[in-house]
Amino acid sequence: MTLTTGPMLALAPGTRTAPGTGANTGPRTGRSRHPYRKSCTCPACVLHFQLTDERVFAAQHWAGYDAWLDHVWPAAACTGPIRLRGDIRHIDATTGELLRTIPTIGMPDGVIYKPCGNRRTTVCPGCAETYRRDAYQLICAGLIGGKGITPAVTTHAAVFVTFTAPSFGLVHSRPVRQHTCPDKAHCTCRPQPCHARRDPGRCPHGRHDTCFTRHRPGDPQLGQPLCPDCYDHAAHVVWNNSASELWRRTKQAIERRLGQLARRRGVPPIRVPTRDGKYRLVDPVRVAHGKAAEYPGGTHPERLIHACWTLGEHPGYASLRRWAHMLGFGGHFLTKARRYSLRLADLRQARIRYRRHQDTGPDHGPIRTADHTDQETILIIGTFTYAGTGWKTSGDALLANTAADQARKRRQAGRDQLADEYSRASTGRQAA
Image (tube, rainbow, N blue to C red; front, side, top):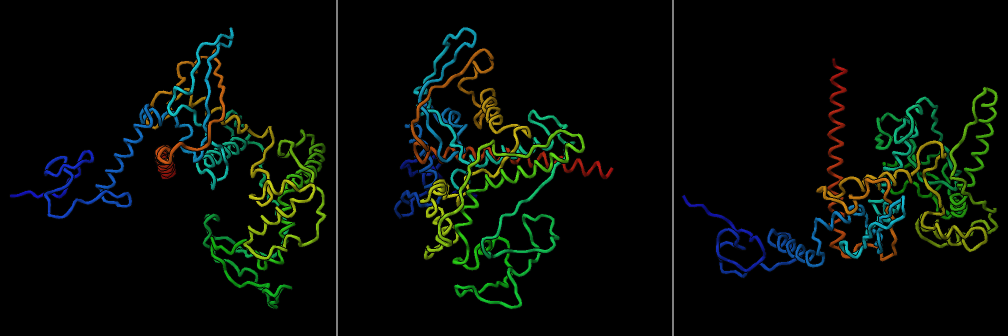
């Protein structure tokens, strides 16, 4: 019996053509060897450029891949980390004696990488995901306890209130009178017609003021005005910019009413969440009505951005230009009272302490300052200067982001496994 083997890849790129282990090809067939191309997806080209990239990385990073990845791990998921250069000083908190100085010049890349901390997914998905998880923990702790909050908060009354903004014009919508689906976030119910009327007409600009379409979820027309020229874009961005002041006045009215009820029933005063006391008083609009509608064309978001820049020329509305990319809104989606739960800063500090005391990299390698972080009498003070933004090379970004993504998937797989085991255990107890 004769065994015939196909072409075999070499352990390293080379020109060896003899058959056997480590050969680049099988026996020659008379045709020229396949040239290496980055656009090619064959195993030979993929392996060749993979090994080439590893050699280039090893030449640029003297510490090696494992040490480099462990060093950048706190910012590995960030698309544009901040590079800091300086010294880390260990100081005896009792005597003030300088025990040790660690310069960043001796670390991989000669800098420390810090996540950018941007909360917008379109800018940095990794940092936005960290903020999303922190916000979840913050809200969850205020409802059921944990993270230093007593479980007694579960006995407190909780009310979910929705405040609807005023209408600035007719927009395409997906009205559903009665939901029968289990998850409204993925609604499959049959909606009503968007804007159905028995006597359809036209707006002053000649466009129909009706829409009989039953929009599907995710329809790009949802939220778009029926007539862009009739829509009050100026009032829309001013309302967004004034949301903090509007909430402050709403909060005052709510607290007055709740205070009256509390005094009658002999209970302590009830506080309503604020924006930490940071509000702007906004003057009434003093520009001609429909000024922003002078913009001749563009999509709905483009017209709102144009309205921000147009109104931003007037006194009292300069912040509209600063927040034009947010359509005039300069606040946060999450606001809370200081006594409701812990702070985001508390979660960040807990994460820093965990990274100092635990393994950081995907392979659980050692960390730089683990020899002193377990001593409460040692202060770690960093003196840094700005050295740049972003990864030094696209290869560094690819390696760091890929490793962080794989770690996230491993953790998510573990969570899914635990949730599955908990669900099966609960089902077994109910059956018993």
